[in-house]
Length: 131
Picture: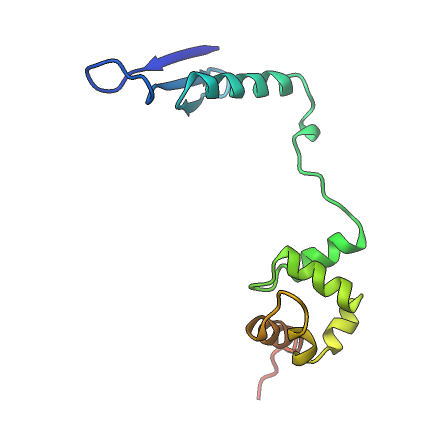
């Protein structure tokens, strides 16, 4: 590993000290603002150096709640908390689709605007028919 200490300006730099770490194999450079931060990055890198790539990958849950939450959060302005509230209130996507705007707006965290958007998305036709 090459650790390069870079000074800015003409005088010594104390709090704005920059440390760059470069690794030749991947030609990556990491700009770090303190020796402590450089140490944390090196420790993390060294701890994962000999581990397989699947350890670094995001774990994707395959349960019902996870799939429903992923589905609902694709709707603009519906966040993960809103999706969990909707799932716990209505139980299924079919029951959610049957809900009125008023029912949706009664859910905690969903105001009239979010309820209207959600209702409109759930009742929009999948195919646009030409007239």
